[in-house]
Length: 197
Image (cartoon, rainbow, N blue to C red; front, side, top):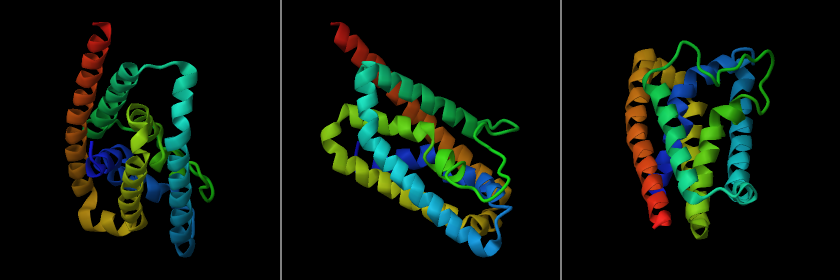
């Protein structure tokens, strides 16, 4: 995978467009004058979490003795579930959390930006080609940067695109992600068969 394709995959998994409504809901009890500061703080925390997990998550795999085919197949399944949720959303989003006061780390940084699906994707990248860590780090940063721009201007984007526009874009992203997930699943199966020979 190239840096661009990896960044695009991470962007699709983070799904900032689908999270706009939940970001705004979590910030509803924060004064308008402070909302931008909170968003910037949470986005920086999310970046720190993503970078730390990119380098430390691989050691968890070594402790658990997980093989690459198992990780590839499970990664494909996770992405497929995310994509199906994007195309066929339920009445309540599983990661949607009620926030009473000013949000801190949860739920804006984790899991809205640095969620379990994003971390699983990072695990897959680093476990397969750890020597390309500089490229993966750049891809994480690019995906985070685009996500940050979208979420920083979330209120304006929601007014400009409207609810239907956001839903249409999220469905389109979901369809792309389904293709990626199926490819990952098939790659994992082929790797497993190759190991048996």
